Length: 226
View 1 (cartoon, rainbow, N blue to C red):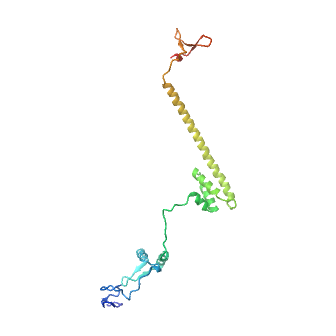
View 2 (cartoon, rainbow, N blue to C red):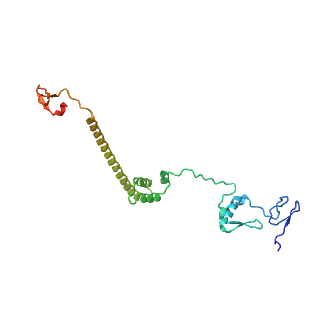
View 3 (spheres, rainbow, N blue to C red):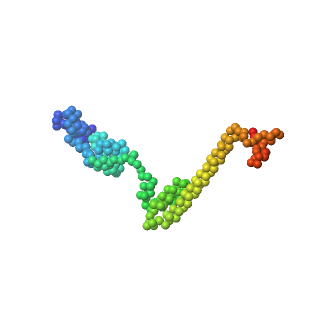
């Protein structure tokens, strides 16, 4: 069986080549019957075509080497690429928006919904603070302002509860530290050697006394004379 497509002869050297060869096998002169490759301006660069072949959107004929687009996916893939000469630059390390910046950019409705969501169930201290920030960002001219103010008071009350807990915990810690300090001081005094005071004296019968301002003896506990 002969091929339906004829062989071609090179205009430069006269070599006979198969019809699907893109260049002469002797002198590499391009096949004049081969369609030109797609240009970058058409949005089908070699890298894009290779990607399409890998994904199954683009097929290459085994006989003639022509590129065939299969379905709309290939068209979408090619059209989604930037035009020739245009470079799309993305910076994955670019800093994301802070919480305060996200609140400012959000609409009053979004801030109200976020405030409601954060105040559900038993909000933590951080959730109450975030809810207050969302609700406080709603301006008086917004339709959501009145409802936001009611929720804002609730969030402030929750934050006040946490502040009172902090004060109680701080007071308890201070009391524990004061009790521990007093205990340590008392133990240190007990470990110090006792000195016998010069104003106390042992009596002839074993009593401990001192001479008062009237010149008389005043007996006291024996421990003062030890």
